[in-house]
Image (cartoon, rainbow over all chains, first blue to last red; front, top):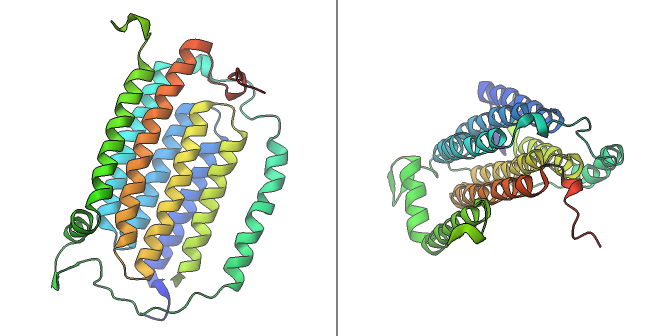
Length: 184
Length: 101
């Protein structure tokens, strides 16, 4: 592997295809008038980003991306779209009145980052192709390596995340209740 | 085609910019939430790219955490959407202006 190259050959071209399609569907999410179309383009974009993860030897994160985003969050979005009648949601004006100003300001947002990318040269790092499969000196799978890191080095953040999900669940149930007075 | 970290950063930056634009200009609350998900996804792309470049697993672990937070955020946001729709019969973010100063 040459210095600093993350992907070469066919994998590089695959990355270009995936990235272009993901960007195209992301733009479609923002532009589409119908929320159902937006949700389906978002699903497509998530799947393509999962493909990019798998190209980067992050197989576990790619699978989680498909399961959680494409499986869970997407179903939640479509469920809400069907709960609120899409006919009442679809409006004549999809954009706020300042959209043209926002579009003009986007280059101003992008130029500093483009400048940094153009000038800054990141230091070369010796790559280790087996880094995502090594568990205590032996060759295992990516899932096992992530599990070792998650349950040994990041056990406390992991538990805090579970508490966060519990709080989010309680909050969603309370907010989604029809009326707080009629609860008791 | 040789892909370096810069290509990843460019793709991630553009995805983030598209999501940011959506948050700024869309009137439909559901589409605003979807744009936030796009931005979180762009951040994950950066985590994975740097994790690969530095041969460090920590980036992958943190993108799992980001996905967790995104799931919680989507659940709360969609509950708010339903609550807003019940009270105002609209999903337009411009009409939810009770606290306008």
